[in-house]
Image (tube, rainbow, N blue to C red; front, side, top):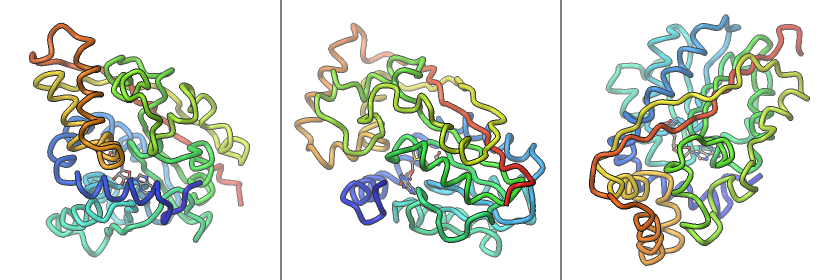
Length: 281
Ligand SMILES: C[S@@+](CC[C@H](N)C(=O)[O-])C[C@H]1O[C@@H](n2cnc3c(N)ncnc32)[C@H](O)[C@@H]1O
């Protein structure tokens, strides 16, 4: 598993720091329907005493919502990108929540420091970026206190993505060079057994399903550009340069007759709810 100091983590950290404000503006509202469902799923479960942790907290919208929906608990966010953490802490301050919530820079893939102490984990749209996601999910499970819940969603592998336009922007036919920053390099169905290691460690899977919502863009061209300038394709731009991205964009747009009209995508995210049994140590 790549540590926080690895080249890959450094690239992700730089890319997400660079796009943090654009991500907050363009993609947070579009991703919100899925995130809200994961927040509600966590809120509806009985939770043991203890703090809540958001793995890959981005610009902090989930931290503020968790404080409001589950008052009385400490809420902590972890994210690789300094720029995201800065926005998250600004949001926490603006909401008057500094006494209960905080965000810090860190690698959320391991969480080895305090096993068995976290009441609830929320993680949205982060797991697909971390190598060996099944091991990461098992690590999150181990961090839970007995009775604790992990509520997770992520963008699934191409094999499990119902919206072709969504998987197409990371398809090798378009990008033509392996990715340095998504788990998709592990194969087109890298998440087939994503809960396996957590289940072997004792996790109960309360939910494993796909959630679909609309996501509107002004055009195909603008969809691509938002994903590059404000989203997950930015790390590729940093690594491979503007010319590579222009060529990839040209291949993507060439597959469609109309590229300048409004579009609505209906992507699936995979939603998981795991519980640590109360009897577990
Ligand atoms: C698509 S954003 C999601 C942010 C937020 N959860 C949301 O749904 O809007 C992915 C975030 O995961 C963070 N990230 C990626 N790998 C990480 C890791 N190993 N540990 C912590 N954060 C990570 C990135 O820096 C980025 O902010």
